[in-house]
Length: 154
Image 1 (cartoon, helix red, strand yellow):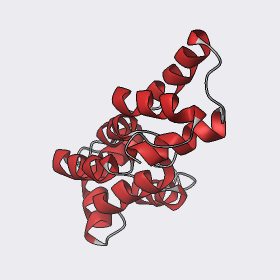
Image 2 (cartoon, helix red, strand yellow):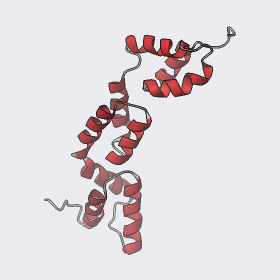
Image 3 (cartoon, one colour):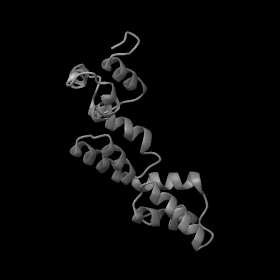
């Protein structure tokens, strides 16, 4: 290993300084730089023991950055892609369910702000929200309620 090459731990810390990463993400990103078997696992164990790698912080970071723009389904995909504990993912997604409709309504308001003019416009608005990961039931209520801005429950 040359002197100009950062250590695996140094590379990991550089990645972690940008945003929270799960152990699985660091493993995937740093594997090409491992020069001897077990070297990366040891470096990650040490960083985890010192609290630099923390799954709960990764979950909170994703929720903080993405929940305002994405539905629970898309947030679940992102968390799963990070290789996080399935129960931590399930708990995080469950915490989003209560706010799904108000979050969808806000995303809809910022993007469209007015009720659909016709069936084509309605389909476009619904597709937009669905691709953001909001449930079809919530999307129907938001787009239908767009003209009045009132929830069906009010």
